[in-house]
Length: 228
Image (cartoon, rainbow, N blue to C red; front, side, top):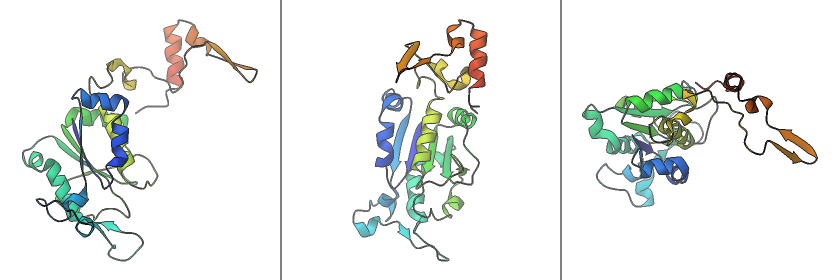
């Protein structure tokens, strides 16, 4: 699986991806992450923009309003650089555009993406958004990570990379760690069985000490949080 991230701020993502499980998954060759900054493609697909003037990719919105809008062509060129040949070659490529009002991402979606695609492109907007004509050039799926507005698409991209990567065999090491392959709870406990803080004792729930796996599964299911 290769994740292609179209973003003006690659550094905001790279630090998260280079830690823990995702770092190990990249080192083991299970996933790849590539960045494409639209500023680099502000001039043309062949010439890398260098000066500040050349690297500018935003302008005022038509129709008026606050803020700036990212121009279409630099983003189109970045996507083309990432997966242009793969798209024309009929490869299993998915392009995702983040939008607050879009259908919300789920664990089932993550599983489907992991099984269905070899390359996933995340188009991360900023400011007032990206010129909507990019969707006339490339077929994209609109996705939301929740009913709220964020500063950019980088956080949603990290969420999807993390969630999809977990569905790829080998990424978690032990595949039984995958929550949707077992009964998982948002409440977990470890040693010691009892600890004291400010003269009050805190105990592990008795059911987890019972050895009765049916009761334990029922208890965990009641606190699963409804993973979908």
